[in-house]
Amino acid sequence: MKIKIEISDGKTKTNLLIEGEDHFTAKQKIDHFIDFAYNTPKTTIIPKFTPEILPGWLMEYDMKNLSQKEKLSILLEREHIGEWVRSQDLKEEYEQIWGGEIKLSSVSTYLARFYEEGRIERQGSRAQREYKFTEEIQV
Image (spheres, rainbow, N blue to C red):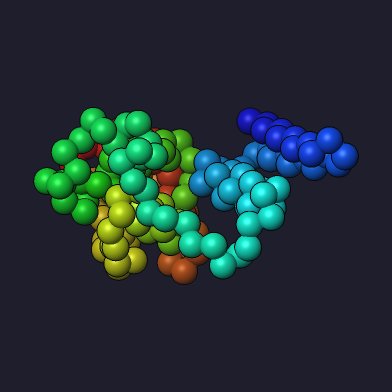
């Protein structure tokens, strides 16, 4: 996949080209590019997701009655099928989307369980481990 974004203020043009990046990394690069374009200070606090800006698919779930494992499973199913992702990135994305905290050890435990159940693949050393979700994950 190739994404090209161009911003022009009438005097200057600035381009961003993203090629071969995973979904989460591409989102981060686009966010940084927009911050640059709007000259947003690095200290700007980005608010947690609110109902007005939640990803549309979240509205399909009863968020108050889901366990952490179920929330992680839904996040993986909706955002990361077929791509390699690190547990640290999942932790950050989980906290942004669901608006609550989750311990990295909990994310790792759930990922290990998904792996043991044959739902995901994994590669790399323990410190640099990545996971690939190849099918829908059912809790």
